[in-house]
Image (tube, rainbow, N blue to C red):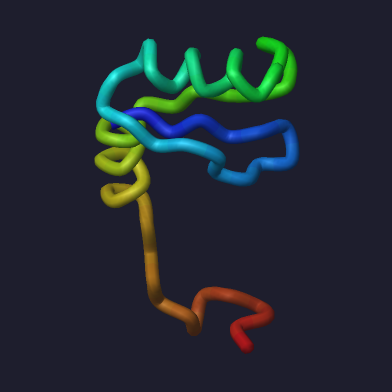
Length: 62
């Protein structure tokens, strides 16, 4: 699964086909410097293993 994010970091499109994400970017005239394509399946595994949800560790946990 791939996610296409714009330069502001907003998720614009998700699809299992990388080429479909690129076609979406081309359709809305997003240049290659204006978006980021991320493999969400691999990224989710990495984030999950490094995530610590213990709020007592944060300085500002409100």
